[in-house]
Image (cartoon, rainbow, N blue to C red):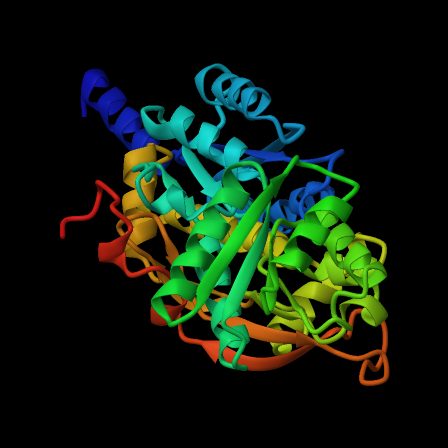
Length: 399
């Protein structure tokens, strides 16, 4: 063999056996680290993302994954600024978590035409898969349609038909009041009125008095976290339950019940997509989470961060790409499967589909220990748990 042929053979051999360079993936957990959603998302969401990266074992798959994080302070302009810098300058491939519906909608617009995805777990508005749907957004854990419809149905099944809403005055509150009102009115109930309060708020006395004077059988709390907790505590001070009116928390998280205590929260109906004590898979993962978080059990949205990141990384591996269009197409093509939500899928509108659960908060006497708060009342099958695909007005859907 001449010298030229020998060199060609050596170069070809080196090219064939050289390992491929690792795929670089950067995740940005955009969350609330200092405000009303810090307990249910916050540092716990960052921990959940870390656990997903650890369990994926990217280094064994030729994928290097790094995580950055930031506090958006529940302000849409701050969320937009951070997300824009991340995806345009810092190489972030997916923006994760994003509490507060107004902030979620703002990030939704940032990623719409960017080479990045939005994996939303905490923002509630069903508009994310409705009129505002984006080809680069996946809405994972719950939405205002799913929790409003399931909880309103449970309450109305008890024979209570007339409602008055106390609503947080921002995108989430408006959406959940809209979705709950639509259910009530189309199922033979009546909405007697509503009133909106600032977000966040401390004093609910005037709002509760107006709800009380409406004579409605049910006072629907279209708010969340500290607003919802304060509403329930102050309703107790006004003797609203003793006066014959019922309270319906349209979005209640496990950390809310923990903060209020079973004495105040007992008997509440609520809808979630995850609970730490559902099965062996949820218990094992939740114990790992709690060990890293000072004994605090995960909220459903922290579980959603874990599951959405894990599915995203599986899609990156399967598509051998971080291109946003390529990866989200693979995410929608591949069935979802994880120990927290089980099997599911992502629809063309970006809605992640899985079972939801109607819970009732236990009495103090029925609880066997810390974080033993829920009884399962009913399982809402995945295909019934979320708004029908043809009713969301998402431009991505071919009806």
